[in-house]
Length: 169
Image (cartoon, rainbow, N blue to C red):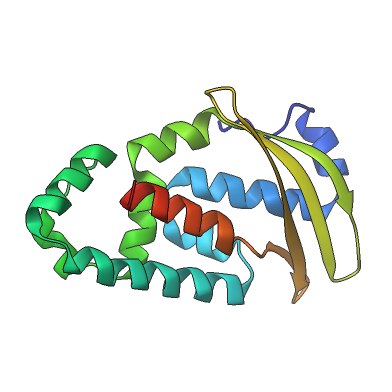
């Protein structure tokens, strides 16, 4: 189970649908399933994320095999350089979600909800992410209501940091 909040789960559920949407996205990321993760996001956010992963896939495909081998070794993933030729943007996302170093962070980080601005179709969740190394990062994300469902939006900057930190460190 991925630690989500310092408060009890019932308190988190009582915080409202926007917090539940954030928790669902966090759980989906921790599951390693790109399908579940994308489904937890607002449609335009999912589309943008897949475009971003496609751009990075193009960069990966341009790297020499020796660099890809070192990159995969650093990420502790079992992949051969030639595999990038058959990957698609979802493959890149799945790689990010399942890389051992990221899985460790997801499983051992804690989200603490600091505050919530609620609206009828747009809410914003302010939270602190505590990683297993003792770092704390204050973040906020918009949560949008579309078709009766609340979904996380606005993760572009977070995903860019994750991708660049993973592939280009």
